[in-house]
Image 1 (tube, rainbow over the protein chains, first blue to last red):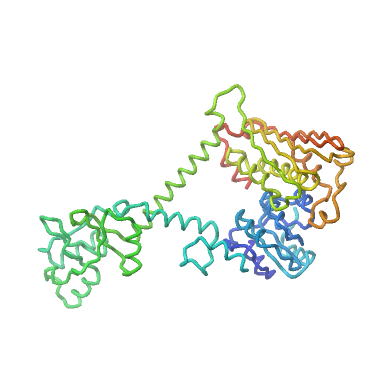
Image 2: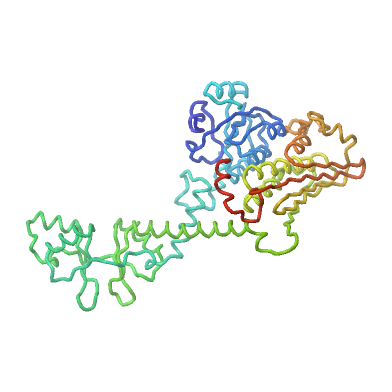
Length: 114
Length: 348
């Protein structure tokens, strides 16, 4: 499953500059709004689903080398956060649904936590 | 969406409105830069098939077929001056007239757009764009034919130059990864220092990201770099969130170990054992709303580091030490035979 498919199927809005999403294949998923829990639990190349939209999510995603961050419930990161994400090559996605819904959809698509 | 446009400001106007990633933008500027560095003579084809004006169109046909070319420059036998070009188009015209035995001067184009071998590539690019031509004859200082420049030559020339850049970057990386080999001492180390400001969430994670990048440059494998990065991130965030005046992170990199010291001048931790417990946090509600204060920071550090020591005195400050031990081929800054790429790639 590629990030490309996930973006299309879940109708996610791409907040950062588009890259070749078909070349990114997320292997795991993780949901939390607590950054240290993400640091502990998310494996690299994961998709991280969160409500947090402030700029530290980029640092976390960058250190863990996450495949993408899905920001739920239309939480909007500020311009600086998006700029930083572009610099670090982190993809930020957004959607109106909540984290539970998005996680369910990702699970349906075959993404797992292990 | 408007804020995204700011990233395009530095790219040339003709890219406006197109979707260009940072990475692409970087490459485009380098290519454009190269067009001002490379001379036409650097990329043109100079081994040429030419004919003199005393040949027939039949000779043109044979020359084109045998050499698989689509245009033949016609040059003066003595002066090597360029007199004209016969292109496939001219040949087709001739064939349509069933006039293959005619002298080539009857069909050759004499109104030629040429470039100078000593000009920069960018001149040729402009001409290609303006004229729509696929091929430009190149003249030397004396006006004699020096070569032919096709769009293919340009692409190939640029790729070759980019490859050269790439090799240089590899060499730089290689040098960094052999840092300690080149410097002789009884014990060499590289020390990185970072000042962390209290409540500076804007830069939260930047020290750890920089350290991680430095380790990768020094040849650390990706897993180690990530482990050190996570440990330092937590220490960095603790300095931002929990101190009165921020603090300092000091990273000492040696081939076989990485030592991280993070210290501050207060307020200090009341109960270190309790602070080490997963889930325990003193963070305020405001901080928790930002997603911090899960009470996982210190446990995370303990998990990532091979050795951890936390000393704190209330009212005085806190000293945190993390050690990472690198064994065998995990060493950094010392090119280790057979180490490196393979493992990094597997892991990444």
